[in-house]
Image (cartoon, rainbow, N blue to C red; front, side, top):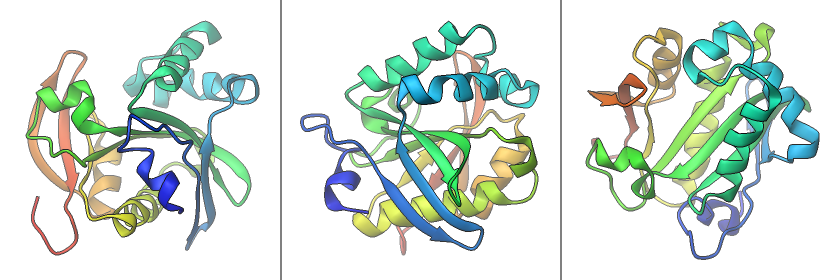
Length: 195
């Protein structure tokens, strides 16, 4: 990961597209900026998968997915990313500057905290431990570039997601009540420090 790419999640003043190319035990994991013309149909299909829709709540016509992704693209503190494993598109990630996000109203955010949302869209990639492998690789890369926490807020009902974050080195903090869900705040501490 280049410094410019890593800094994109913490610098609203000079937005740079994020790119990640990470080796994992499951294969080469890449994250690249979402290109709406190319990626929206695929992301829309994933959002309409019942297992994804249960937690993302973006099922419906492609316009609904488009509105969500475009809001991320227009945001000064977030970046939507397409995840590929060994060249195959398998999921959708969002990285964001947590202190600039509404999440900061619900926990003691630190200025450099990086937030992550993710979905594994391809059904055959779920339930096999892949989420934790990808989360660990991404969090390691973010923290290698600069010591900082990585945070997430999966729906507390999404036991598989909480389990994946835990296996990737995140620690469950207090539950938080967001307008749309009761979430488990997950924090991956700076290596060598506590949450």
